[in-house]
Image (cartoon, rainbow, N blue to C red; front, side, top):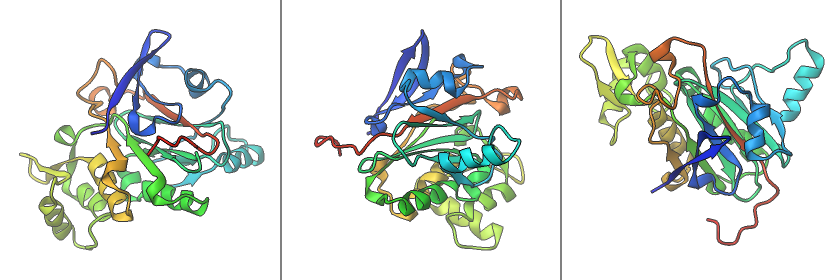
Length: 266
């Protein structure tokens, strides 16, 4: 089993996953609000360059180079995207989330990392496979990737319309008809769908759908970890947009390294 650990920085709690042990990383809690990544990176690796995005619920994944280029040629302070992949060591990549899934990825051979914001729209648009395709284009092999999904809203409390569930489900079920997609999702072992008492609604586990996308790509289940925390049900640690309707977030980040040459790490 994958283990998750609480750490303190300046008396405040953040979470790490043993799967990402080689990299400085953290899923930070709402108690750090309103600090931004340039401050939070101090807790992980003070020498790293810091990158974040203006998130738009899409599936665009950028490199720091592309972010810098965008900022240089436009009036925007931030590039519009929902994922970042490092292209050099000592780059801290960050995403913000409130109920959506923060996904951190590390490559144990290259040291390269990714940070992704996978809400239901990004998940339907397959942002995690999109990021992994870009990492592969930069020399990553699937077997070397380690993926940790941080605190997000859990399936048992995430009520969505059947149409939304079908849109997300079409990312793993190759049907065009919503009814067939929903039926096929229900039939999956450890299904991401739970029934709901309200007509036209279901409960959906978005992190499970992302895990299924990863499995379909060929990422081993033992290289995928899902945090045992629900943002909606853990108000003492996490903001939940669905619970509070406030535009507040928690940040998740990871720092790229030189080639990782730890013989004992697998």
